[in-house]
Amino acid sequence: MDQARDTAFYQVLGVDDRIDARFELYTLHVLLLVMRLRDEGERGAEASQALFNVYVSALDDALRELGVGDLAVSKKMRKLGEALYGRMKTYEAALRAEDEGALSQALARNVFESEDPEIGTALMRYVVNSRARLAAQPYKALCERPDWAEVTA
Image (tube, rainbow, N blue to C red):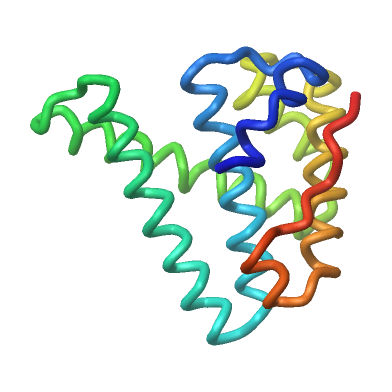
Protein backbone atom coordinates (compact mmCIF):
# COMPACT_ATOMS: atom_id res chain seq x y z
CA MET A 1 0.00 0.00 0.00
CA ASP A 2 2.88 2.35 0.77
CA GLN A 3 4.27 2.06 -2.74
CA ALA A 4 0.86 2.79 -4.29
CA ARG A 5 0.77 5.98 -2.24
CA ASP A 6 4.16 7.22 -3.48
CA THR A 7 3.65 10.89 -4.30
CA ALA A 8 5.70 10.48 -7.50
CA PHE A 9 2.70 8.81 -9.15
CA TYR A 10 0.79 12.04 -8.66
CA GLN A 11 3.57 14.60 -9.02
CA VAL A 12 5.68 12.97 -11.75
CA LEU A 13 3.20 10.86 -13.72
CA GLY A 14 0.19 13.11 -13.26
CA VAL A 15 -2.17 10.56 -11.72
CA ASP A 16 -5.14 12.45 -10.27
CA ASP A 17 -5.24 12.23 -6.48
CA ARG A 18 -8.74 10.82 -6.19
CA ILE A 19 -10.12 7.71 -4.53
CA ASP A 20 -10.63 5.71 -7.72
CA ALA A 21 -7.11 6.46 -9.00
CA ARG A 22 -5.67 5.39 -5.63
CA PHE A 23 -7.72 2.17 -5.91
CA GLU A 24 -6.22 1.58 -9.36
CA LEU A 25 -2.64 2.02 -8.14
CA TYR A 26 -3.26 -0.14 -5.08
CA THR A 27 -4.79 -2.87 -7.25
CA LEU A 28 -1.91 -2.70 -9.71
CA HIS A 29 0.68 -3.17 -6.97
CA VAL A 30 -1.22 -6.04 -5.38
CA LEU A 31 -1.41 -7.74 -8.77
CA LEU A 32 2.34 -7.38 -9.32
CA LEU A 33 3.02 -8.97 -5.94
CA VAL A 34 0.45 -11.74 -6.46
CA MET A 35 1.98 -12.60 -9.84
CA ARG A 36 5.47 -12.74 -8.31
CA LEU A 37 4.35 -14.78 -5.32
CA ARG A 38 2.66 -17.35 -7.56
CA ASP A 39 6.07 -18.01 -9.10
CA GLU A 40 7.12 -19.48 -5.74
CA GLY A 41 4.85 -22.51 -5.91
CA GLU A 42 2.88 -23.57 -2.83
CA ARG A 43 4.43 -21.16 -0.35
CA GLY A 44 3.85 -18.33 -2.79
CA ALA A 45 0.24 -19.39 -3.35
CA GLU A 46 -0.39 -19.22 0.40
CA ALA A 47 1.31 -15.83 0.66
CA SER A 48 -0.58 -14.46 -2.35
CA GLN A 49 -3.90 -15.58 -0.83
CA ALA A 50 -2.98 -13.90 2.45
CA LEU A 51 -2.05 -10.72 0.55
CA PHE A 52 -5.33 -10.81 -1.35
CA ASN A 53 -7.26 -11.22 1.93
CA VAL A 54 -5.50 -8.17 3.38
CA TYR A 55 -6.25 -6.25 0.18
CA VAL A 56 -9.98 -7.01 0.38
CA SER A 57 -10.07 -6.22 4.10
CA ALA A 58 -8.35 -2.86 3.48
CA LEU A 59 -10.92 -1.99 0.81
CA ASP A 60 -13.74 -2.87 3.19
CA ASP A 61 -12.16 -0.73 5.93
CA ALA A 62 -11.68 2.18 3.52
CA LEU A 63 -15.34 2.10 2.51
CA ARG A 64 -16.42 2.13 6.13
CA GLU A 65 -14.05 5.04 6.88
CA LEU A 66 -15.67 6.93 4.01
CA GLY A 67 -18.98 6.51 5.80
CA VAL A 68 -20.51 3.80 3.64
CA GLY A 69 -23.16 1.99 5.67
CA ASP A 70 -23.17 -1.74 6.35
CA LEU A 71 -25.88 -2.51 3.80
CA ALA A 72 -24.14 -0.59 1.04
CA VAL A 73 -20.68 -2.03 1.79
CA SER A 74 -21.54 -5.45 0.36
CA LYS A 75 -22.86 -3.88 -2.87
CA LYS A 76 -19.80 -1.67 -3.23
CA MET A 77 -17.45 -4.56 -2.41
CA ARG A 78 -19.10 -6.66 -5.11
CA LYS A 79 -18.55 -3.83 -7.64
CA LEU A 80 -14.95 -3.38 -6.48
CA GLY A 81 -14.42 -7.14 -6.73
CA GLU A 82 -15.65 -7.15 -10.31
CA ALA A 83 -13.38 -4.22 -11.13
CA LEU A 84 -10.47 -5.93 -9.40
CA TYR A 85 -10.83 -9.17 -11.32
CA GLY A 86 -11.26 -7.32 -14.59
CA ARG A 87 -8.13 -5.24 -13.98
CA MET A 88 -6.08 -8.21 -12.86
CA LYS A 89 -7.12 -10.28 -15.85
CA THR A 90 -6.30 -7.47 -18.29
CA TYR A 91 -3.00 -6.44 -16.70
CA GLU A 92 -1.79 -10.00 -16.16
CA ALA A 93 -2.57 -11.02 -19.74
CA ALA A 94 -0.68 -8.00 -21.11
CA LEU A 95 2.28 -8.59 -18.77
CA ARG A 96 2.56 -12.30 -19.53
CA ALA A 97 2.30 -11.62 -23.29
CA GLU A 98 4.80 -8.75 -22.92
CA ASP A 99 2.29 -6.60 -24.80
CA GLU A 100 3.32 -3.10 -23.80
CA GLY A 101 0.72 -1.49 -26.07
CA ALA A 102 -2.16 -3.35 -24.43
CA LEU A 103 -0.79 -2.60 -20.98
CA SER A 104 -0.38 1.12 -21.79
CA GLN A 105 -3.93 1.22 -23.14
CA ALA A 106 -5.38 -0.47 -20.05
CA LEU A 107 -3.43 1.76 -17.66
CA ALA A 108 -4.45 4.89 -19.58
CA ARG A 109 -8.10 3.87 -19.45
CA ASN A 110 -8.20 2.67 -15.82
CA VAL A 111 -5.76 4.96 -14.02
CA PHE A 112 -5.92 8.13 -16.12
CA GLU A 113 -9.45 7.75 -17.53
CA SER A 114 -8.10 8.33 -21.04
CA GLU A 115 -8.42 6.43 -24.31
CA ASP A 116 -4.97 7.69 -25.39
CA PRO A 117 -2.48 4.84 -24.74
CA GLU A 118 0.42 7.34 -24.71
CA ILE A 119 -0.93 8.66 -21.41
CA GLY A 120 -0.22 5.26 -19.83
CA THR A 121 3.28 4.77 -21.30
CA ALA A 122 5.35 6.04 -18.34
CA LEU A 123 3.27 4.04 -15.88
CA MET A 124 3.58 0.98 -18.15
CA ARG A 125 7.38 1.31 -18.05
CA TYR A 126 7.22 1.51 -14.25
CA VAL A 127 5.07 -1.64 -14.13
CA VAL A 128 7.35 -3.59 -16.47
CA ASN A 129 10.45 -2.49 -14.56
CA SER A 130 8.84 -3.30 -11.21
CA ARG A 131 7.85 -6.74 -12.44
CA ALA A 132 11.46 -7.42 -13.46
CA ARG A 133 12.83 -6.17 -10.15
CA LEU A 134 10.36 -8.25 -8.16
CA ALA A 135 11.22 -11.33 -10.24
CA ALA A 136 14.92 -10.88 -9.44
CA GLN A 137 14.29 -10.54 -5.72
CA PRO A 138 14.64 -13.58 -3.44
CA TYR A 139 11.39 -14.74 -1.82
CA LYS A 140 12.33 -13.79 1.76
CA ALA A 141 13.42 -10.28 0.74
CA LEU A 142 10.27 -9.92 -1.37
CA CYS A 143 8.09 -10.71 1.64
CA GLU A 144 9.99 -8.27 3.85
CA ARG A 145 10.30 -5.34 1.45
CA PRO A 146 9.41 -5.60 -2.24
CA ASP A 147 11.91 -3.94 -4.57
CA TRP A 148 9.86 -1.54 -6.70
CA ALA A 149 11.16 0.42 -9.65
CA GLU A 150 11.62 4.17 -9.42
CA VAL A 151 8.70 6.24 -10.67
CA THR A 152 9.98 8.37 -13.55
CA ALA A 153 8.36 10.26 -16.40
